Structure formats: structure tokens, C-alpha cells
Amino acid sequence: MSIDLVSASWYLARGSGVSALVLFTLVVVLGMATRAARPVAGAPRFAVRALHSSAALTAVVFLGLHVVALLFDPYAQLRLVDLVLPFGGAYRPFWLGLGTLALDLVLAIGVSSWLRGRIGPRAWKAVHWTAYAAWPFAVLHGLGTGTDAGTWWLRAVTAACVAAVLGALAWRRSSAFEAARRPTLTRPGRPLQGSSR
Image (tube, rainbow, N blue to C red; front, side):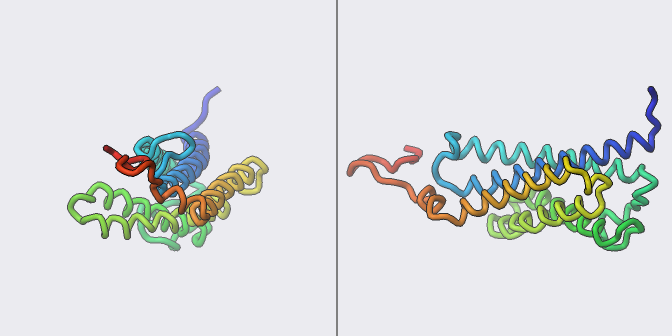
């Protein structure tokens, strides 16, 4: 059974888009988890941070596959300019524009992370906070432009992603998160729990 280039790009665009959403959800959740000073779910902070970075790189790969596949999909009618300038596309311009905004923000986060040593931690952190805008833009983009937006399985995946981020956000705003950020003292003269000494 042969699949032509148009069909292959359509399937690749769908699969990579959903995969990117799931991975970016994981990135956002792990990003919140790295703010805790203590181990998260039994994993030390450095491991959570490493998983966060690895998931982010993998998500960017899937996002790149999604964009490239859409360039070959004649139904999407995506132009190179639509990858940078939002809301000018031929197909569902508003929803496509949200995806473009998410892509632009992800690229800014990636570039700032790459240049972190040169731009300093304050500038890096300011740009990094835009991840909290990129993620809902990506969710809305998928619901507004995705050909599978009305299917039960994509609604279930999207609902699970939203629930994961809302759960992580609720945890981050809770007193349990604040307690996890504060180191606890052991006996006098002993180092703080979680201390590197």
C-alpha cells in the first residue's frame, strides 16, 4: 500500500502536532516542578531539571516536524511568512496565528536558553516566562485548526494536557509547594536537608 507525499505530510503533521502538545505539556509541568527545592515524586531536583531540558528539546524536534510537514500540505496552504507573522494565513487565520505565536515564543525561549550565559539570568528568566503564554496558544491552535479537533481521542488528549498543567499550577500555588521550597533544619550543627554539603 503506497501513501503519496500529500497524505504522508498530512499524517506527519497531525501526529507530530499532537506529540508536540503532549511534550510541551510535560515541559511546562516539569518547569513548575523544578522550582521546588526538594525532590519531586522521589526524583532529585537535578534529575527533574535534566528531564525538563530533554523533553523541551524533543518537543522542539516534533514542533519542527509539524511545521515542515504543514509546508508540504496543500490543504493547510502554509507559507514561510506564516511561520513568523501571525494571523495572515489563508486557512483559519486566527487559529493558525495562535500556532505562529506559540512557535515564535518557543523560538525566543530556545534562543535565550542558548545565549543564557551572554544575556544573563534576568533576561533569560523574563523570556522563559513566555512559555506560560506559548502553551495555551498551542492548545487553542490545535483545537481551532486541527482536523481531528472534533474527535473524542484528541479531546481526551487535550483535556489530559489541560488537567496536568492546571494540577501543576494548583500545586505550585499551594502551601505544600511553598513548604517544599523551604529547606528543613535537622539538629543544630548539621547541614540543611537537601544541602550540597
